[in-house]
Length: 226
Image 1 (cartoon, one colour):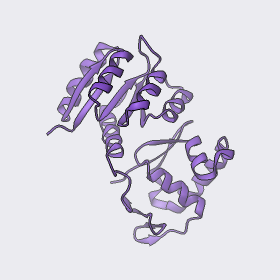
Image 2: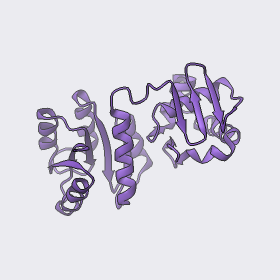
Image 3: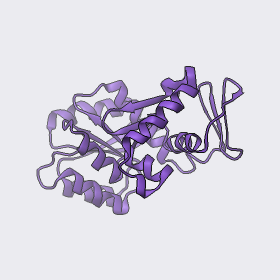
């Protein structure tokens, strides 16, 4: 049974030759586009479950294509790019990308990121009232967090920060998204303020602190655990 349809948007033939059989071996149906206009046409005609999008396209800037796709496409979008700038990553994530993978990439990591993005994009993927991440349990209806069965004493801000990350589990959430989501627009640029609270939260998470991963210069990602 197919794991879903994935649209690969990249103008490098060698990348397509590498990724198509890789995805097909993983159970996905792979469709390719070498230009932004082909990508828009294919995504509109038969929307895939996910899009792997390179930013360096010949006929349109990748960031612009991302914005146009997000007008009508609500599935998962993962950026594949050799551009290492944190500003590029933040722009893409804020514009609606679900994740950002740098070239050259590890195959196992790419497939894991794709699976996580597809889970998040699936209907009701984040509406479970209780979320289990390894030894960490988030009981959202009762606003309780347990670690190995013991309730953690979190401040309101720490709880809001953790649950915002949990609603996007497996995905990067940018500094700005976290600051606006937890503290409001007036604090959108207070990155150092966010780092202090993340540090406090990690100390309280103790052995589970490794679940809260840093994406340098971009934001944070809550991992799914074992």
